[in-house]
Image (cartoon, rainbow, N blue to C red):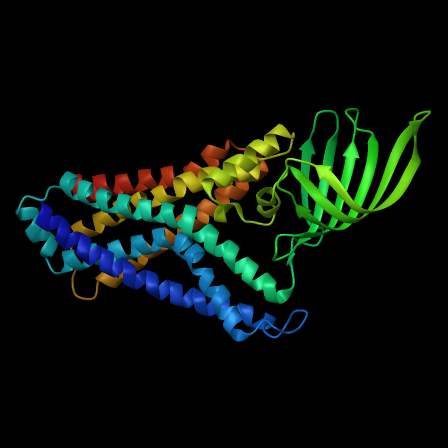
Length: 368
C-alpha cells in the first residue's frame, strides 16, 4: 500500500503543482494589467512598474488560497483519468486496491492539501496582503477606506461612540477622524473632529488639530454648550489598529483569530456581525473542500476510456468544480441577505457536493 500511495501521491502532487502554477501565472497577468493604470500615479508619481509587480506578487498567496481546491480537483481528475485510460488503475485493482482503500488513500492526500490551504489562508496570505497594501500606500500616499471611511462603534461605561476614520497612513497614523458620542438614552453628547491621530500604547488615541463640540439638553432640545479647538486630545478607547484595519479587509483574507475577536467586538457593541460570522465559518470549512475535491475525482479512475474520450470527462469535472465555488459564493451572499445560520451558509455547499461525490462513488464504484 505504501508503494501505491507513493505512486498516486507523486503523480497528483506534480500535476496539481503544474496546474496551480498555470493558474497563478494567468491571474498574475490579469492583476498586473489591472494595476498598470496606477503606475506613475500618486502624489509624486513614485509608483513605478517594479512596485506594481511587487504588489501583484504579494497578492499571489491570496490567489493561491482561493485556487488551491479547484487545482486539486483538476490535477486529481487528470491523474485518475489518465491512470484509467492507461489501465494502470485496473492493474492496481487486480492487485488488491479495493474502493475503500483507494478512498482512504485519496483522503490522506486531500487532508495534506487541506492543511496546506489552511496554513496559506491563515498565516501567509494575510501577512502578504497587509505588506502589499502598506507597500502600495507608501508610494500612493495613503490607504483610503471607501468613500466615507471606516465606521466603528464602541460602548464604554456610560456612553457609546460612533467612530469614523477617513484614511490610514503607511506609518500607522490616521487622518480625517470623527468621533460622535451618545449617552445611554441615545442623546448626542459631543462631536469631535481631528485632522490626524495615532494609536497609543495605553488604550487611547492621540488626536491632533482637534475641533470638539459639546452639547447639553435644554427643555428637551439640544443646545451647543461649548466648542473648543485643541492642538492635541487624548481619547481613551479599546479600539486598536487591527480593528480599524479589519474594516477595510475582506473577511476571507483575515486570520481566523482576528475574525473571531472582531466578531466578539461587534457583538459586545450591538452591531451586526453576520457577514464576519459567515466569513469565519468559511475560513473553517474552506480548507475541507480539498477533501471534497479528491472524493469527487476518484470515480474518474473507474471509468472506461477510449482514445480521445478523456478530455470530455475532465471538462465535466472541471466545470463541476467551478460550479462548487460559484455556489459557495452564492450561499455566502444568500446567508447574509436571508439571515441564515452562519455555519449553515458556509457549510452547505461542501455538504451538498460531498453527498454528490459520495453518490457518484457509490454508483460508479460500488455498484458497477
